[in-house]
Length: 228
Length: 107
Image 1 (cartoon, rainbow over the protein chains, first blue to last red):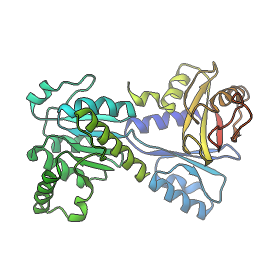
Image 2 (tube, each protein chain N blue to C red; image 1 turned 135 degrees about the vertical axis):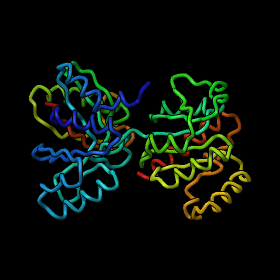
Image 3 (cartoon, chains in turn blue, cyan; image 1 turned 90 degrees about the vertical axis):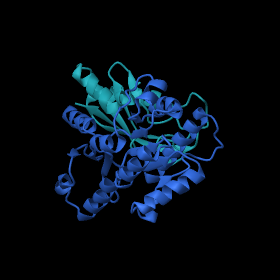
Image 4 (cartoon, chains in turn blue, brown; image 1 turned 120 degrees about the horizontal axis):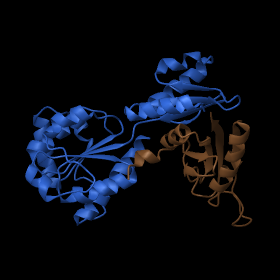
């Protein structure tokens, strides 16, 4: 691989963008793919079709009926947490270890000061406004942890209007039922509401904030793999 | 720890910027119980240092020595590893898989 291609991949990853490298494993020739139009030089129409599908789904692998190998490079997985709460104190370091870039948003200064977290700067603003600035892509998980509908609901609506791969909302079955009713009244379609995992996390009978953090992270990982 | 810094592409970029020659190994095909999925990458430099992985530690030693050749001769190479039952010192995938690794110099 040319060093110049490595540099191109690096700058795409820095911008949170997808890109790919197509290698002819017989000759070693390579093409850097930034946009779909970059596959124009591939001669075989069938190969082009397979490539388009793989690029669309973000899948790396050997391209059927050809000598090509496609490697897709994508942005780092992000986890947006709304709520600087007790669970966040554990969910943040765990998720960072697993490889997520974690962002915590909470407009309530009192919570930020009470539940301090090392190595992370909590964004002290209204979540729905900030989230649009941060940007949600297909490698983003959004989780609400405040139990406060003023903060959680607008966040969930923003997430539902995006292509994020995971949406979770903390709260009991009853709380989730109430939340679902509110969102329905706000015009969210029932089939869209199914995207929200509530109560959040895998059912491992988690009790403590640490355990709940494990169950949330486990469900995020499960969903990430399903999408892939 | 910033996970992103451990991305083999960033590591390779850093090495090349410091003038250190290196090679890139990519899993391009797997059969059976292969530890790492297609697309997994590892970078190896001329001093034998490496980052990332293409298996669960089963074949990395062999990939590193092959990489030193690839860096020396500046020629890409396809490696194939199978299951081994002979001895623990053999290079192979103990879990019973087969994997193809594409090794290329970063020039």
